[in-house]
Image 1 (cartoon, rainbow, N blue to C red):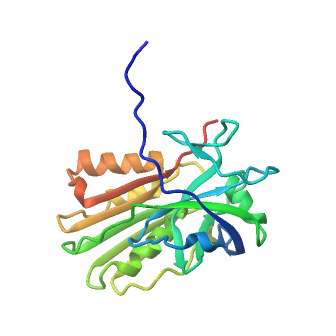
Image 2: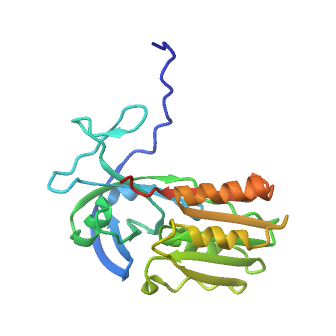
Image 3: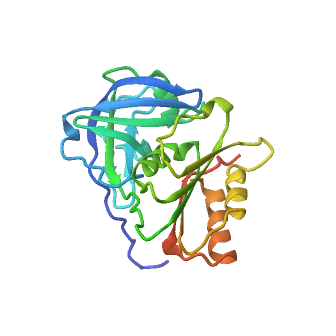
Length: 255
C-alpha cells in the first residue's frame, strides 16, 4: 500500500445560490435558461468563452449545496451532485443567461425543459476563458452544438481585420442559429452523420484547412474528437501548442 499523500485539487470558486427567472427555446436543439439572484454580485466574466458550473437538484429531491472534499463536490450522503459546466451567454447585473443543448436523458437538459421561475439552482465560476492573440492574422473556430455559446463570444471580440473560419457540427438542420456578425468570417454548418463518431466533420475540416504560423485554432466539443484534433495538429502538423486552445466539453456515454 502506498503512503504517498493524496494530491488535492484547487477548490473551485464558491457556489452562489440563485433561482430560475425564465426559460425559452432558442432552437430545436438549444434551450435558454436565465437565472439570477443577489449572490451574482461580484461575479465577472472578463474573458470570452469562460465557463461556470451549474448546480441543480436531482429529480424529485430538494436542493442542496454540496461540499468540496479536496477533490470534488459531494452531497451530504456522498453522492455526486447534478453539476455540469457551461459557457454562459451573458451576464447582466443580477441575471446570468445560459444556453443548454437539448438532449433527452441529460440531467440538466431535462431540468431546463421543465424549470419554472423560482426553481433553485447555483453557479460557481468563472473558469478560464480565451485571450485573443493580437499577433494572429487568422482564427479557425471548430465546435459542436455545445460550443456555440463560446464561438458566439469569440466572434464578438476577434478583431475585424482577422480572417475567421467557423466550422460547427449540428445534429439537426434547424439547430442553425444567427451568429454575431464578423466582417471577415466564413461560417460552415456541418450536419452530423449517425454512422460517424461525433466531431468527425470537425476533424475533416481542420485536416483540409491551412494552418500557417499566423493561424490560431480554437476547438471544443466531444472529448475523443478533440483529442484526435490535438494529435493531428501537434503530431502531424507540428502546430505550436501556444497557437491552439482545444477543450473536451463532453464524452460519449459508455454503453
